Structure formats: C-alpha cells, structure tokens
Amino acid sequence: MKKLFLILFVSIFFSCNSQGKRAVVGETEYQRELNAVYKDASKSPLKKRDLKKFKGLDFYPVDSSYVVTAKLIKTPDTPFFEMATTTDRKPLYREFGVLKFTLQGKELSLTVYKSKEEYEDPKYEGYLFLPFTDDTSGDSSYGGGRYMDIYEKNILDDNTIVLNFNNTYNPYCAYNEDYSCPLTPRKNHLDVAIKAGVKDFKK
Image (cartoon, rainbow, N blue to C red; front, side, top):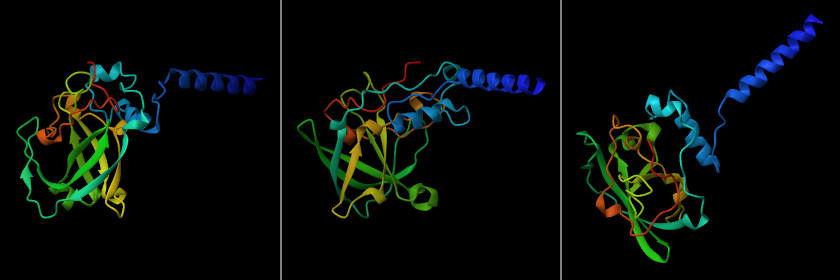
C-alpha cells in the first residue's frame, strides 16, 4: 500500500511539474529553436524583466514566397573594412559577394559579408553574414535591420543559394542595448516589405 501511494505521489508530482513548465512555441522548427534560446536564461539576450514574462518571439506568418534562389557573384580579394556598430567597436569585415534574386516581381541584390574572425576562428568556418533592412524596418520590424545566417557549404556548383527570409532574426541590440551589433550598410536596403521572419520586439 505504501509503495502504491509513493508511485501515485511521484506520478502526480511530475505531471504537475511538467504542466508548470512553459512549452516552447513556434510554427516551424526554426522558430521553436530560436524561442528556446531566448527562453534559456543562460543564453538569452533578454533583460531579466523581459525574460520573466517571455512566451515567444513575434513572427510574421510563414510564407513560402519569401524563399528565393539567389545567384551569388563572388567578389574575391576585397579589402577588409571597419564595419560600424551600435557601439565604438569596429569589427573587420570584407565583402564576400553579391546575391541577386527576384522577389515580389523586383530584381534585388544584397551584399554578403565575412568577418576577419570568421577566417581565423575554425568554429566560424564557412559562416557568412547577411544583414538587411527593408520597407518594414522601423515599423513592424526592428529599425536596425535583421540578419540571416547563410553558409558557404550551401552554395551550389552553379553559385546559387536558397535564401529563406522566414528564417531571419534580430540583432541582440533589439532586446538589450548592452550588446554591440553591426549596423546594416545602406547598400543592403531592400525596396520591398519583407513580411517574413521575426518582428520587432515589444518591450
């Protein structure tokens, strides 16, 4: 009888405990993974007061029309330059290439970058930096622009690569001014409204 009572007690305890935990929300695996990071106090850029009430980031509806194939025109031997940030920090980047693609009936282009750190640190090998602003910036999306992670290994033999604007994210500065974030170069403004990916954070 005691053993049965103990089993019931443990079962009820863990059942209540699991119900008390907040489930990770998100429409796609990318959204759930991003929300999991922001929910984790050891990794999250959120301030303590924002983390306490955090349920999930706000995203535009997932839209397959914002998944495009881009042609990469590489720009070899470009010099490193100091990229402006939200602080006095000036990280060194170089232009890796220009991505050309069609979206909403318009021919568009974005410059993709690679930092000096990415050349020197093995853990960043193959990582490319793609910041952009668009006609939603400062309105429904973060005014400083959004980022997209792309990788050299995903560039096909014909120098094309898939860009998924649903999988974009804000720089940490959108959540906490203590971070230092690269500012999107003016040449990377898109004259269309990219209603995909993460929205601005409402503090």
